[in-house]
Amino acid sequence: MHNSTSAHYLPICLERLKNWWSQNSRTHHPLAIKYLSTCESTNSQLYRSPSHATTLLVTETQTQGRGQFEREWQTRAGDLIFSLGVRLHNSKIQTLSIRVGLALAQVCAHFGYAVHLKWPNDVILNNGKLAGILVQTNPSAQDQMSWVVIGVGVNIASRADVTVNKKNKPAFIPTSLSQADAKWLSPKQGEREALIMYIVDEILLHIDGEHILSNEYLATLWNQHDIWQHQAIVWIDPFGQKHHGTGLGIDANGTYQMSSRRGQVAIYSGQIRLAHTESKTDSAANSL
Figure (tube, rainbow, N blue to C red):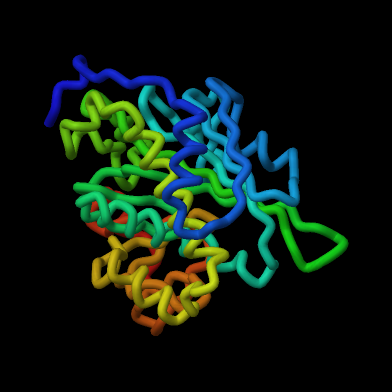
């Protein structure tokens, strides 16, 4: 564990973001890059402003950031906060969160960090939540294309001091790159910009590239990172009912699969947790 008191983060530089893209992008995808030192939410900002141009919005601080289930997304100085707006055919939306998650896992592997993926949209490092994804779509009534906004938050600043409310304990407490690697306590000039742009490049390769993965191969690769696979899990359905089973990974449609007493169950929504993290008072939960 590294001491966060010595952490130092230089402000994001818009020109460095643009220079990285022009010099290093493997997608050769035209990209409008914008930077705000603070905003209410990068996702909200892009969602309200559909464009024909693929657009990246980066900020240092969000005042109203939200994650899954409208939960507050808490950020700290140094974190990576950005959203990518892109027009996609509606047929690509179903597996979009899965493709983005795999892109993040592969970027982490490139930089030497072995991560797991928590369905549908979290990146787990050393048993803590490192990054989250929030996808929002703004469909067009005129054609089969939608304006899609992909929000990504990556924890850079230490979360070693985070305390957890036992009554509302998350499946994974927050962690950060600086807790795993001391270089992220005071990254060199341009390192945060390079990581943002590498992630954006990888996402675009996965969702709109010439060599986009088939859904079947996507599932195979994603399941190699699945935090729940072969684990005893509890699925909390949208009505709050709890169902026990074993994680099997996703299918080709990005739907999570769980084996149970009644056979294989497809999970489209709700939450999944490890069975042993649920309290003993939940012993009366349903077993499918």
